[in-house]
Length: 366
Image (cartoon, rainbow, N blue to C red; front, side):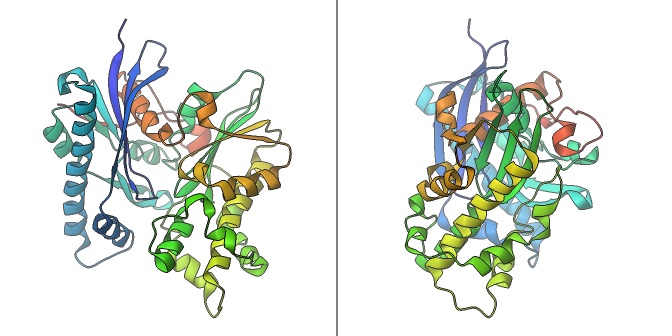
C-alpha cells in the first residue's frame, strides 16, 4: 500500500546549496527515500547570504528580497525533483522547508530562517511547512537542534548506546543511550570555519578530504586558545551558529600571529575533532558506536582524527544504517512536516530546554 509523499528541503550553515529528498511514509513514520536531488547555490548567492549573517545597511529589505530569491531556488529544486520522478504537485502531501538561518539568538528569544514559504507554496502548488524553530523558542527552548527526534525514531538501538553526529557548518550530537534519556546539542564548529579559511586562501568552497589541512602542522597554542571558548563549557541544552563562530571569532584568535595558512587549517580540523570528543566524554559517557552524517562525514582527515581521539569506539557513517550522509537532514524535515500535518509533537524538551513538547511548523496551504 502506497504511503504519503513528502519533500524535505535543507540548506544549512555550510551554504553549499539545497538538499531535496522525496520521502514516502507508511503508518510507522519510517521513511522510504524515493529520490534525492541537490541544487548548488551560485557563488554570488552564497556571498550575499554570508553578508546577511551580520547587520548590514538596509538589511530588512535585503533580507526580504533574499527570502524571495531563496524561495525561487527552493522551488527550482522541488520542480527538478518532481521532473526526475514524473510526479505531479498534487501527489505530494507537503514540503518541509527549514529555510536558511540568518540569525539564531535563542538567548534573546528569537531565531530567523528565511525562504518565503508563502511564495514557495505559490511557485510549486504544494503545501509548505516551515518555521520549525520558533514555537520551541517561544516555549523557552533553544529551537535547535531539531533532528535528534528524527535520529531517535530512525537510528536508536535497544541494546547499543549510539551517538549520531551531524557535521555540517555546525556539529551537533544526538546521544541515543539504550537505558537513559536522549541528549542532543550543538558541540561547536563543524566545517564552516575551515570552509571560510580555504575560501580565503585557495578560493575553494571546502577542503576535500582534508587534503590541504593534511599538509599543515598543528598549532597547539591556537588550539588551546580556541578550546577555551566559554560555549564549549556550557551544559546542554545549547545551540550555536554563525552568530558566534564566524570569521571575526577566528580573526580574534589569529590577531598578531603569522601562522602558515595550512597550519591554521589543520588546527581548525583538530578543533572540530576535539570539541566533538570532549562533548562525548562529558555528556555521552558509555557510547558504543558513533555514526557520522553531513559534509564532514566525507572528510577523511577529520574522521582519522576523531578515531584517534576516541580510541576503540566504532565510527561509521549513517550509510551503514540505511540513510546516506548527505540526506539525513532533508529527510528529517520531510518527517517533521509529516508530524506537523498530523498535529503531533516533534520537539524534545530534554534536548532544547523548552517547557514542554510542541507541534512544530507553520503551514502554508497549497
